[in-house]
Image (cartoon, rainbow, N blue to C red; front, side, top):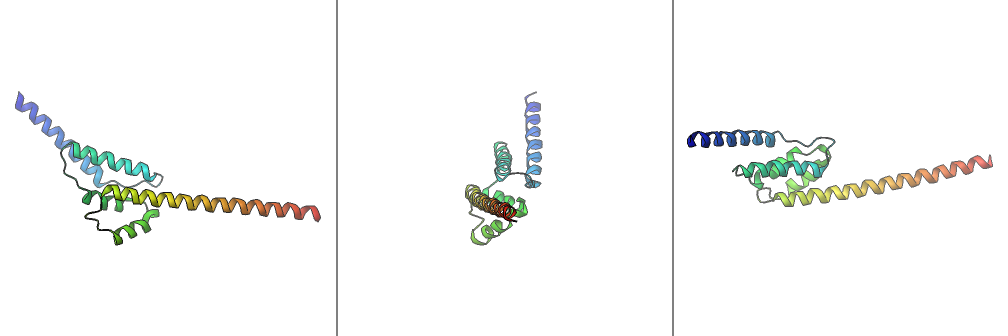
Length: 134
């Protein structure tokens, strides 16, 4: 009876690990997904794999994450690939680099949007003034 229970337990772990490996291998960032949500999914899958005894290293996770990002991250991916030794680059370092890039990109977008709004406002004001004097 004990051997049967151990066999079932090992089978469950094997099946669960196979499912998690498949999830990891097919993992890609969705076009509408935030960077934080994607990284959270990666962390969850990798943590579950490790909890079932899988020996998955950052040297495996980091390149997978870089390959799985959406095209809007292409230039930061290229920069990381060209300037970092991916075999020793940790997942935490990767997350920090990607989050810093995301924050900078968001600041630039906000600044650009503010300029757009202020230029639209000032041109609308000029148009209204023109109408008064015609």
